[in-house]
Image 1 (cartoon, rainbow, N blue to C red):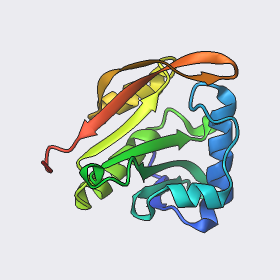
Image 2: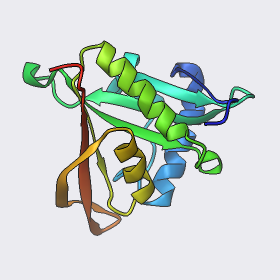
Image 3: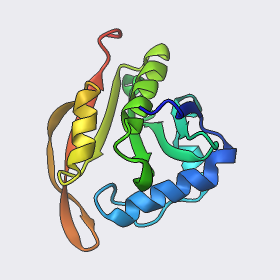
Image 4: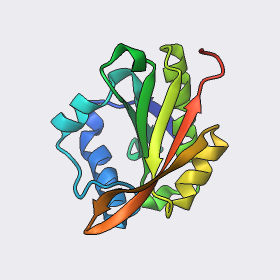
Length: 166
């Protein structure tokens, strides 16, 4: 990763840029089933405050983000989160997503979270590669799990189990 990138906790001050990067990923078509970025209030309510981070360039602009939310309120799943990671299209290929994932892994393990999971479209090969390199494994393919712009899409379920917890 380029030396001028730093990681910080995501705050309200980053909201506009975070949601713009999210919208850019949505518009590319292979990042999420969402069709538009949520409001900040919805985003904020769905993401765990201790497990969301931004990557900032030398000017302080947000160039990527990662955030996790609980998968369930059932106590058996207290140590399982689902995450998303997005990088601004102009700054991809610089190791930002991997650095953000590593930061998320550190924060979740410190909090006793044993599993981080995500669903990734099979066409998003870059994301699958970054996740594999960060220690995630493919659990399986959820076939025709949802419709995206009128087309059934598959999702590859990936997870990272902490070797330190369990």
